[in-house]
Every structure is written in C-alpha cells, then in structure tokens.
Length: 346
Image (cartoon, rainbow, N blue to C red; front, side):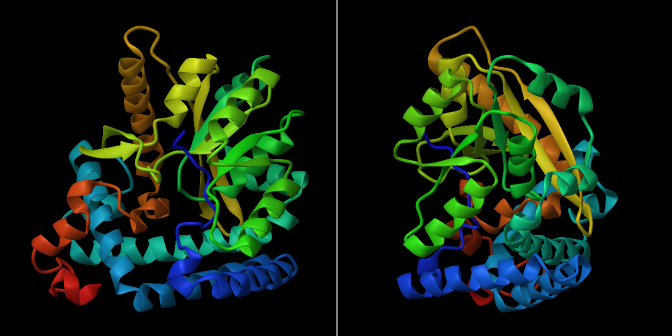
C-alpha cells in the first residue's frame, strides 16, 4: 500500500552524510524540542523563519525545483481564478514567484519547529489554536459509529491534524510511516507520535495493519500526495499528470470506510485553520476504475486545500510531475527567475 505519513523524512539522513549524521540529527532534534517547548513561541517561530531564509540561499537546487512546481500551481490558479492574488501573480511575475518560493522555505522550517514543539501541544492548546472551517463535516466524521480514513498531504502543519484526531477520538488512530535509514531518528519520530496517541506502523506491513485497524473500529491516517514507492496511479493534478499513491483508494474500496481529505494551514504564529472534506468512493465499475475515480476526487480535494496557501505545500521541494523532473528542467533552458541554466542553480 503506497501511502505514507512522513517525518520530514524526505530530507533523508543519507543526504546529510549517512547514518552518523542521522544519529546526531536525532540527538539535536531532542535538544531543539526541549528548547522549543520552553522558549516563547514567537521567538521560536522567528528563528524558524530566519532558518528558512538561510536555507533558501544555501539550497539553490531545492529552490529551483520549488520554483518549477510553484510556477505550475500558480499558472493553474491564475487560469482558474482561484487562490490568493499574490499566488496568481506568480504565474507571470518572476518577483512574485520568488516571494512564493522564499515563503515555502520558511513554512518548511516551521514544519520542523512544529515537530519539535509537539510535546507541548496539549488538548487545551489544540482547542485554542485551531479554527475549524468545516465544523459540520468534522462533527459528522467523528459522530459516525464506523471508523474513517483521513487522508492528508504535505501541507501546512502535518502534525496538527494528527494530534487533533488523537484528541477527539477515544480510539487509537493508526498511521504508516516510512522507515528511516537511521534507527535513532526512527525511534524519535515513533516515540513522539506515539506520545500523541497514534500507533505507527511500517510501510511493509501497512496494508495488513490498516485493514485490521479499520475492522477494529480504529481510524486510519495517511499522507498521500506523493508516490514514494512508485506503485501509484497517474491522475491530473493542477492540470498535469502526477502519480498519487493508490493505497487510500484500495483501502477505501476494501473496507467501505468513509474517506476525508484533511488539511491544516498556518494563519499566524501558532494559529491554524483546518478543513475536512469528504472524498466520494465510486461504487460502480471495475476495481481499477473505482480506484481511478477515487484518486481523481482526492486530487480535486487536494487542489482546493493547496489553492488557499500554495506556499505551504512543501511537496513542491520534491518531484511531483514527471515532465518537471531533472531531465525536463535540464532541457528547458535558462531559469525564468535567475537567468541561469538549471545546472547552474542546482
């Protein structure tokens, strides 16, 4: 089942120098977490923003990929007439596009800060800080007697909906997580997410464990806007084919459980807005046709969530559309913003 939760996972220990650096990262993350839970919130968010700005300058290759992906999103937003004006302008304004890229780096840094601050997120904190924009849908999802599948994406605060789910159910949410190459980092994320009340399972046993969880009546959470295992299905996303994990579709078809797309975006320092949207599961057609229909509906829900704050979709730092992959960027000529070739900005 190719649907995963992530851990900030995608910036892998291998890239930072292997297993030893991963262990150091785990130890460092523990120290940062201790400090982040005790320092003034505004100070920690300011530090995260400063780190994001520095990251933007020090990672031109990552910025180039985000630039390509955000340009595609902005072009779609402009054509559809949706989303904030600042994002739509990025479709043909290089300065607006660059502001979007820089903001994306700041939001990625804030994601890591939120991972570190999770131990300080009490039920009272959650209730005070998140504004639910779809209260009727949320009430219906939690009021149902049967379990539900909650599908999220690499957007805004990934930790917040997980904590919200754990706080608002008397069942044990179950979520798959990719196994990291460094055991210390793996243990850190399993421990912190376990402290939230979430049971983490590995990708290898994910399908079996998630089906069993739904049969027990436990809710299931997945992050499914990136196909990390290569077993996904192509679906139109922002006007172009992208591969999405097929796991949520198969799980929904096999279990009959209702599915909800969930997103939580930042609206200020320590302030959030959350949305829940029901994703229909087709009842007619072959298994593949039903899966394709579900993924198309899921993609529309993802588009609606991302459109509100595209700079908070941190999947843009990774490959989403095959035609914007490394080969495509090399062949497109000079970068629209810097005037340099893709090789030069990598």
